[in-house]
Image 1 (cartoon, rainbow, N blue to C red):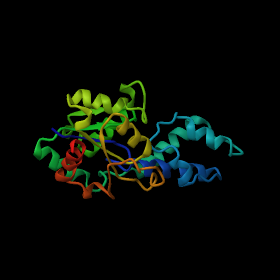
Image 2 (cartoon, rainbow, N blue to C red):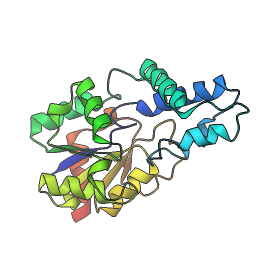
Image 3 (cartoon, rainbow, N blue to C red):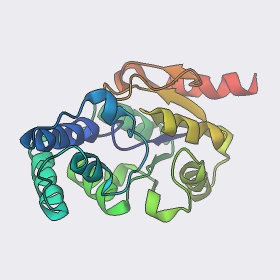
Image 4 (tube, rainbow, N blue to C red):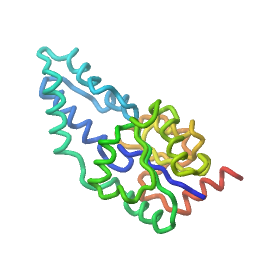
Length: 220
């Protein structure tokens, strides 16, 4: 038995770039630069809502209120977030559904965001389980999210293949004892993916035979 588990942000939906660009624009509105390299330090790690606000305030001569920061970055984000999944995701999910392979999402983000995002992409019915950061004790890079996915699917962790876009997510899946496929996002390409069992450019490079072969290499 094979199960395939997807991270959400940066793997299913390119929300990472939309989030970065929304914050970059707000920082620029206040005369402050926010580089991709700085932003990349937080990719795959759930930061407090105030994280980037605090970083802005220490550099800004006239800091905005937190409410204005939150509301404006959310507006900018909605203007930029894509309305379709990342390349290859829809086709891969379709192949997994057709083959009867269990499918799940494992994300550190909260359920209200992940489920709404999947609903918007019309992908929610394609998953047998959706586990989010507010449903477990410890977030990635701890293994809790992925171990809970395995529990809900009723499948051994070593029969799961996880598709991730970040170093912390990869570490989480490996700590759970799962096989891993890394698809580096432009904002996470500087992360350490050396521990991945397979690294590809996009989900379009994956098929059922390739994912099954990863499990066969485990038992060889």
